[in-house]
Length: 164
Image (cartoon, rainbow, N blue to C red; front, side, top):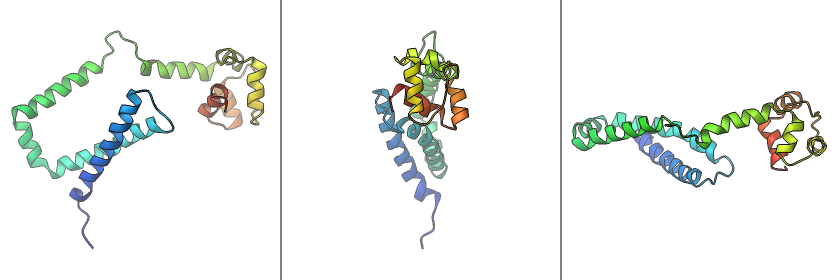
């Protein structure tokens, strides 16, 4: 039986995770995120980092030589500057910055108020939940209904907004 070495798995892991992250990243950029696309992109980034770190470790001599070259140092400098620039919003408000506070407001809003946002009457919203065995009232929030029913907050939001 062949010995499993870091070199034997580092490059395939790096390549596979890179391909997955590239495809999911492009699809996310195009705002096509069906199923668990975003989750796969976020979680596989950790596998990519593990594979890349191991790949660098087994190829440390060529890596160090690359960093001694002008192109190696320049690439690190350029991408460090780009990362630094993108760490700041420069007054621009982006969709990802808005996502969490909007989601939190929806989860904490009374169901009666959420009904209007979803284009439903409060009674229709409560009937939609009741049809799935979820007992709630208009004063409750998604968070409270989730705690009472044991159903995930995102699932409850999906029932309301995606008409599932």
